[in-house]
Length: 219
Image (tube, rainbow, N blue to C red):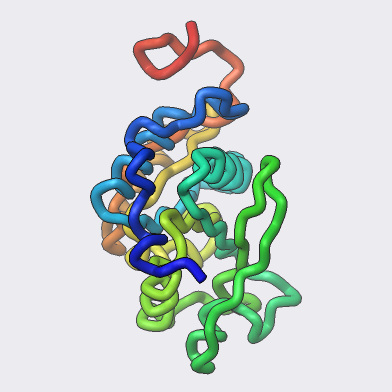
């Protein structure tokens, strides 16, 4: 069995800030991944929400891709959590397990060619207002994973994202190119920050144009 202290320390041969996979199939996420790994290098673990102002920006795709890219480093153990309500999840969420005094069990799933532990946060249709239980869950997961990625609903699609906002370390806003209005982005960021969420930055998704190298592109 791996010692927890060993698990929470990146291998000595791996500089977290310089271990972004060179052959990543999602090279456009390399700048964000580098930032996340740098934070992990300093704090040893990180819980990060991925959300958007409005539905349809591709948040779930970005969350899955960043989880797979982190797993591709070879040393970063990753968990991918689903914060969206589920019609068949009554009483079976990870927070429910914590409140029953059980060890939250995640299930391995093949994502982007890598086996990543996954789970659902909450129960059917209920806003996740049990913040103490959520923080306890995250505390448990920090002992097992370097990076916990939380795939959240859009900020203005319901109350779920705002309920969980303050429990994560950072939040990343996914912006749909040529579709998401700047006003909506500003409103979403303001709503998150009022709930105590640290907004790390934004990711532009579904862009049809090449991004200049100065902004992390290949042009």
